[in-house]
Image (cartoon, rainbow, N blue to C red; front, side):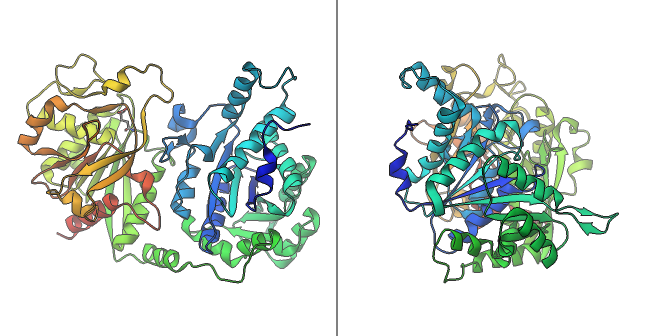
Length: 548
Ligand code: GLN
């Protein structure tokens, strides 16, 4: 069967492909293993990118409720992607893009569009080869962008799932085409049965058999386990799964996800990959900075208490990037950031002092929809009046503007038109350009936009004297510039602007130790190598507040 894409040009490139599959159960941490592989390869000087193939039919996670899928991560080019891409960036410090997250929905949409255009010249369009060709094309697309040494592809889901079959089939075909330029890393679980007092290898054997039924022999088996694997266990897995014992890698439960690259280094996972792909492995990876980060993270000199106010606080992954940004910023300040979450629906003026009174800083989270808005406003009022360091992100900034309008400027009806279309004081309103777009999916201001900082504001110092920055966005509503002058005069002033579209990006409250609201999402850009300056500064302010 002739492919529909010029795959031959890709095959000749020297890029190596690493596929990461998962077996036995979900939530084993394929994203962290993939990110750790990326980190180790980057630390050896290789150029690396990671992508995720998600078997669900949504085009992207943008329209998924956080209850379904955790946080939606936004890339520089404005793609709404799986939260694993956040881990990829935080570990490898390499930005991802739209092309790094591909769903079944995207694959089918593209094949059906081609079919409608007659591009298949009357053929019967089928899962094999048309869907699998499209998957292979997407996997190799990244090699077109840049001469990567490695492209890591994480296959979402668990082997044996009906919906991931076409992806596994594409891996089978690619492996045949790419030969030694490709390795398959299979992550499985080796459970400890307390009653038997033993680690059990049978689930791993079965999941490798399932992979073999699809024609894929894994090269390396990474075993998630809560106890160390003995040599006997390693040999047994090797024997049953057709790999050498050195290719059986232990992935023991770690204290922090950031320990995993070091643990994988100790297990020689990087060496195994380099040997199998015939890449040079004579030098040690440079992990000095990473180890320094781990050390400071684990040996804080003090602790600060930050309140995270949002409406998805009961969900572990809903504010993933914010939580991780605090880990980076904490290490950079030598403190441990203890995050206490507060459900905004249960906050009001009568209970904020009791609930938020012992905090050293308050962050009001991004979000959509009216639920919990009044609680966020009450928390902001308290932070403003009590001079507790305050950080508002996206909806958090918008609520700060509403709060100031109502309680300082006396605009009692101040609101966002997202929640009250008929408000007499629409201090937050939809941008003109967004008004023209209807529907929900993908109609937001998304991705990276420039912002100019005001040189007379501490914001410049926070961003280390940079005047022009870029930050990532995900929103429809904006500060309404008709109110700019009254706000400015009363002490809430814009200190970061998008000059081209005249949009307020950052507001500061003068006369308050630390009070910033940002229309963008700094949390998407914080990495271990580059903790975000706003989070670093906020944690520093919280520490000073705690030390008082
Ligand atoms: N709902 C707000 C808007 O669309 C804020 C979005 C957000 O916090 N990401 O503008």
